[in-house]
Image 1 (spheres, rainbow, N blue to C red):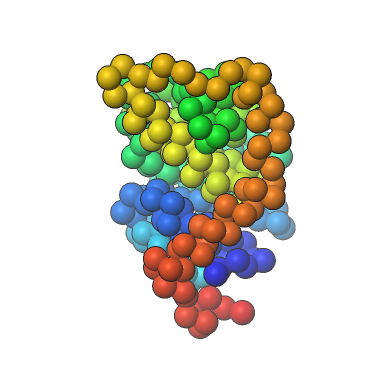
Image 2 (tube, rainbow, N blue to C red):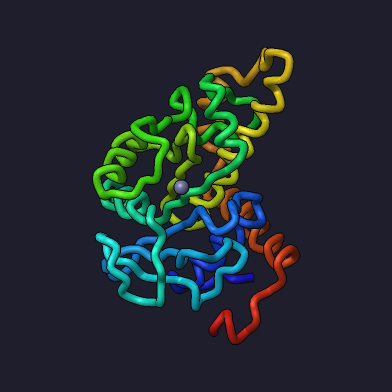
Length: 243
Ligand SMILES: [Zn+2]
């Protein structure tokens, strides 16, 4: 497993976990973690698939996108992560993916319902949607607008594009992406023939929001995704993985 304590190892593990969770879109989509020394954000270099990320394919970017460590190139949409980390001191990690179920569900333009445990972290009472553009979040101002839309939420849909999720740490941010994608997929399944007809009560959702997705549960789910990535993509060579 790539369970490193350094930001670069966290970035490697996060992308492999997202790949194992089915969120890869060829070479698009990315996760980031806040630099503990305040220099900016760690993320993957552009041009590589999630399962292809090694420590050599990780970059440290300043808040305005200057490559401080690593070879790049940087992703055009690094502004998503920079803006979310500027806006949310409580957030340590961010994820942007082009999840297929998220895109398909967002196109229905109906409320996200608590059909399973997966939707619970995102309902207040509906999932947030960023609708200023479905184009690339390629500027600082669009990143800031996305952060405004997200507010204090755990994640939001971007209709016509994908999703973003956040967390205090990389395990939570990645698990939020996995949960939001699954929640969207389950509602798509239930939408056949005009459904869904029933979903969890407001009282059940409130109770679940208080304790269901604890840090322990999220960490256990993330560890599973890391093991699944090893089984699916092979473990990194020691030389690649570093110490
Ligand atoms: Zn995108």
